[in-house]
Length: 347
Image (tube, rainbow, N blue to C red; front, side, top):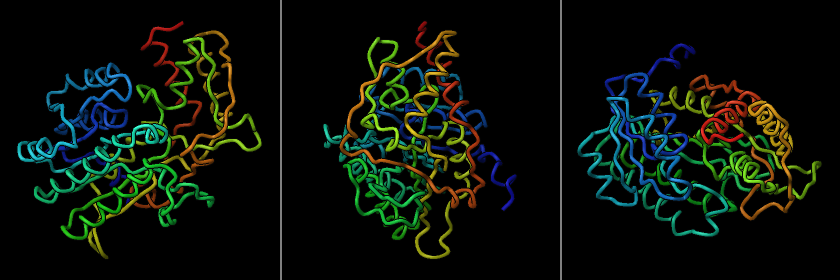
């Protein structure tokens, strides 16, 4: 398959339903598709897991597009999902709505069952009764649990999750495979690794570190202050993620052997030490502000549900659609720092 074939835009005659459209990845994907002339239906319940004002700010940037329609609704409400499919008849579904966060799943497990299990079931049922060209859904690198073999590959055993969030995402993969097998739904699951960038999620470490600095608070670093046994994360810039997803949308899996269902890692394949990531963020904020930024740090033990390292093997996705991230953490964090300073008007 030629790279040019992978880069072609989605057919603008298609209608794409993006759940979680007010979320970080959902917003950027919807924006990319709208810029190409596609019709996009955005669905989001605008919950208050993090500040709703940021979700509304993302939506405000989508509203000028004539081919964008927003529906406020909860995927856990089957009537809402049914009505969306009956009225808008989506050709492609990108399911990104979910209760996110590893640590929050320990505090509020009910939210994960309702959104990630019940809500996903409703999406699958809708795709069963209203067939679509392709269902792309969000899984997570969290499914790899405490696997020590790196890089993580799609064929690795993922039967030992260490958080309820991870368990729900593994369940999504099993549910999608079952529906794909039974009803021929072309479905692709994406195991996202750490995604970052402007307008990102405030609960993510880089965002919360920045917020703590401007609030005059120390940052909490969950690595015990041990640089020799640091946490490693596979950080992927949002533009690279969106490009990979865009390429994948018009390449549904074929039922060549078994169910038309595939699962891919979508990450950077270049894990960075948490301490290096923090140092880079300090430098980028210093550049954005024109003065030196140094975080005050409190070192704490690794948190329940966290894993020591995430490291993606992305060979399968590269072979399938030519996906290869290009943004370095220096470039990506600089864009985030510049956006944060401007958006929040900090000095």
